Image (tube, rainbow over all chains, first blue to last red; front, side, top):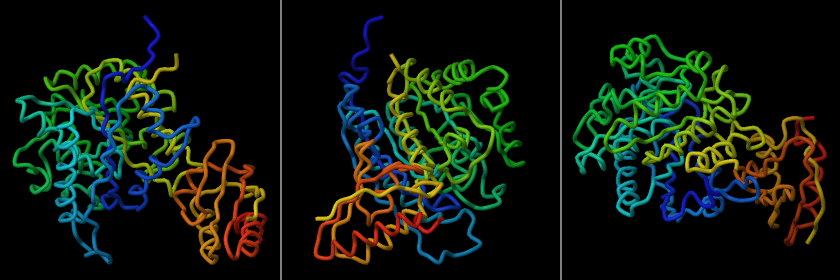
Length: 318
Length: 90
């Protein structure tokens, strides 16, 4: 194998910020976008590193998010639904431009509710070409709640259910079709904190074997789990998208996130997972979410998030 | 222009609450106040919390302080005193 001088040679990436944080219970993830853009790590900004890897970078700026009015109307479940619908439409519009330019979208979040908007847009793009697209979802949580099973009403606990076709009809049917994701093309890695209703739903969707929980990772190792996840998602004719919640990683390595759960993956396991995905070559878009600089310690989560983007795009140690 | 060095002495480093203290003090002055973490070649406007969080300043980090403007002397002394006090966390 020759020296992989520039994995990005001849490829375009489109950076898109989605500063939406109202889907979470705690504010701050909307600031993750700017923190990732501004942070210097290993002597360079994210865009600098991407350029070094040979990528042609187009910065699409940030999606204009419709902000909820405060004080909010209580007892609303899901919370901030109208704002979410409007914001999802704007996300779709922006992603359309990225795809039209032939760039691989790199989406900076935001809380995980943005996946409703982003994956709906991705799915719709591939649907126009007559293809289904898969998804690998990295997360400590299943995010497979619906308003009926959610205790909090926070939409960032519902995106996976929504794109699989369950939940609030106005979100499920965004873009005029549902589901956005077929269960057989869905893989989930890193789960360790599920609500009772969520556990039931995973089984109802027939997804038990598509979930690679922390227990599975402990038993089989990250490499085997990610390879299996890849096998599932890459069966989709259009390729697959990746959405990465930094809370999959153990709070020791990624403290800057709003819903931390102990017992996550190590720093290296997270990199390994994305390195293996990059080697596969079928990734059609990458999204990183739930980075909350206000809860971070010495910016380590923000910088880790940026490093993970590089790994997903083919950066290797040697 | 006044220039000098300040040290992050509080245990948790320059995290959100500590950075907010710097913003609060810096906002009382008209001068341009910036902090530089030379180890990482990162510079931040002392009026932006987010900017300062990206300095990655953990406990023990020495930051370069630069103050320029009509009230630079007062501002310089105030920021110096704030860091010496552990950003209100000692």
